[in-house]
Length: 122
Length: 108
Image (cartoon, rainbow over all chains, first blue to last red; front, side):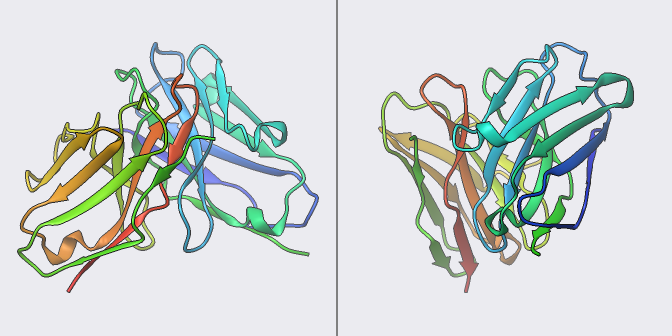
């Protein structure tokens, strides 16, 4: 059974760096095909894909946010960490991590965490 | 940039058929995927590769395509189907993911 859980600060000040962690179980990120992605959702708005890390440590980023994002994995801890620099109030959102279907040629997510709410405010 | 366009809202009565469209702005088009999201919950994958229903998803959910438009059809809509639905695809190279703006399905 695959589960994912996000954790991180609930409040971040403008210009600060956000670090959110995804702890997962039920799969290993050193197994071929596996990947973990991050998606966010501002209150009442659409989903926005942020980043993905593959088992190979290959990474993909949203073109519009690439300069602000870093994604890393710790296979021994079953963890993926996303950092986003220079946070602004418009970055206020629920941040989800999700498991990529390993058998797919596409990036598609079959299991999601419950999300962690991040508010950017001074 | 690659965009997916969805109608903001669709309303149907119980037992009727709901059709939610997702329009890509360029060809060739990558496969589309559909997620259902209920208030306060994480999204759930309800349609894969345009027309493939994941395990556990009711048969009343189906998918179809025509050119740049992908459609999620829910037959015999039930009250429990009331939710936001998001389509997802990728750019032509499959490098990055794009979500549609979402459609709020209201069951009258």
